[in-house]
Image (tube, rainbow, N blue to C red):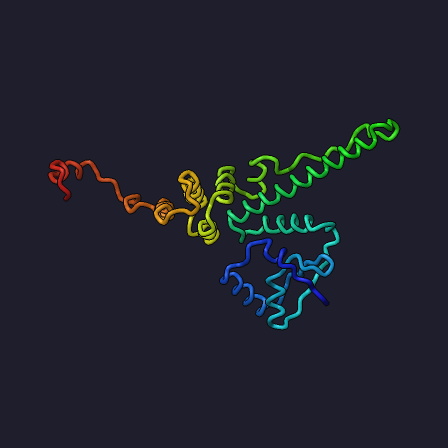
Length: 241
C-alpha cells in the first residue's frame, strides 16, 4: 500500500517530545501498532509517529479511510478535534488549537455569507427563484472567548494569556512555554513587557523574573511565631535570635 506523508499535516500538530516518542516506540515494539492509521485517499492524516516507527522496524499496521473529508480544511478541523480531546496535550497546545479552529470556522462563515450574497444578487430580478428563507450560516460556535475556553478546557483568562503569547512572544519564550519551564501567566507578562518596552526579545532579566514568580518563597512555609516567642528579649530589642 502506498501512503503519502504530507509535511504540512505532519507539522500541523506539535511533535512528541523525545521521551514521549521513545515511550511510544517501546509500546509498539512490545504490543504492536494497536490503533489504525487514518487516511484520506492515500494521504496519511493521523498516525505519523506510529507509521514512522512501524516503517523503521518493519512492523505491520492497519489503516482506515475517513470518507467524510471533502477538503484540507476538513482534515485540519478533524485533527484539531482529535488532539483537543487528548489528555497528553498541554494547556498551551490546546489553546493554540482552539484558536486555530476559530480562524478556520470564521473563514468558512465569511465564504458562506459571500456565496449567499452572490446568490441573492443573481436572483433579485427573478421573484420566482428568489429564496424566501435563505439558508443563513449558523453562528460561529467559537465566536466568543468563552466558547474557545470551553473547547480547549481552559479558563477565559488562560485563553487571553495564550493569545498574548502567540501575538507578542519571542520564539524562545514560546519554546519555554511548550517545554513547561514557564507558566502561561508568567510568559504573558514577559511578552507584554517586551511589547511595552518596544523590545523584540524578552531580556534575560525578564525571563529570570518570570521564572522566580513561579518559585514559592522559602518563607512561604515558615511557621508563624507564637506570642511568647515575639515577646522574648531578642525580638523586643530588634535583634535576630
